[in-house]
Image (cartoon, rainbow, N blue to C red; front, side, top):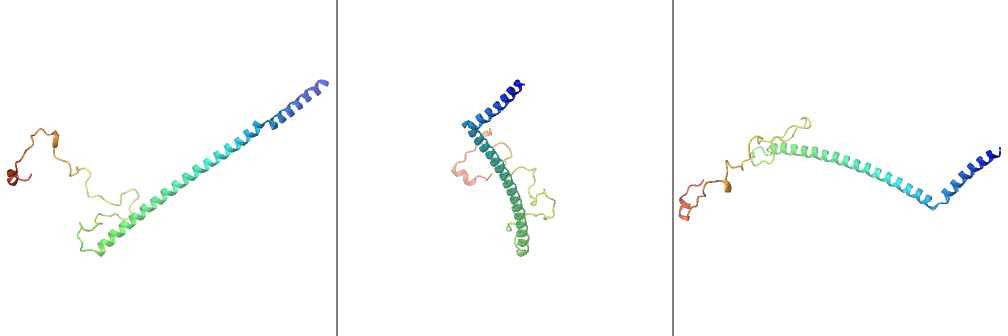
Amino acid sequence: MPWIYAVVGLLVGGVLGFAVSRLSTPGYKKQKSIQKELETAKFELEQQKQDLADHFAQSAELIDSVGREYTKLYQHLAKTSSELLPETPAQDNPFNKQVAEPEEQEGTPLIESDAPEDKQPKDYAAGATGLLTEQPKEILKSEEVVTAKAS
């Protein structure tokens, strides 16, 4: 029976020694405070990420609504310019582009382009020009300039 008292005493002494050493050690308190600061910083970071995501979602909605309002404004101006100035030539009317109705499906362009996509731009030359041509450059004298045909 004395050995049971010895084991119980040893266990109680171990638990008390562990508790006293943990509470009296200055590093333990510092570790606990750093752990709290870390958890607080993690929470603030997650909160900031969520706020940023909410901000960008709201910004996207606002930009979308501004785009819709701009389209409505353009359609209104195009309609009223043709109604109020019916005798204005098409080249003088800034809203002479065809505008689709707002009931059209989303995802389709509201302003139709008059230029076909398969044609090349008008500034392209029909062949090699400039330094890459093998034709000699024609030099005109001042007397010939007056009589030369424009090419």
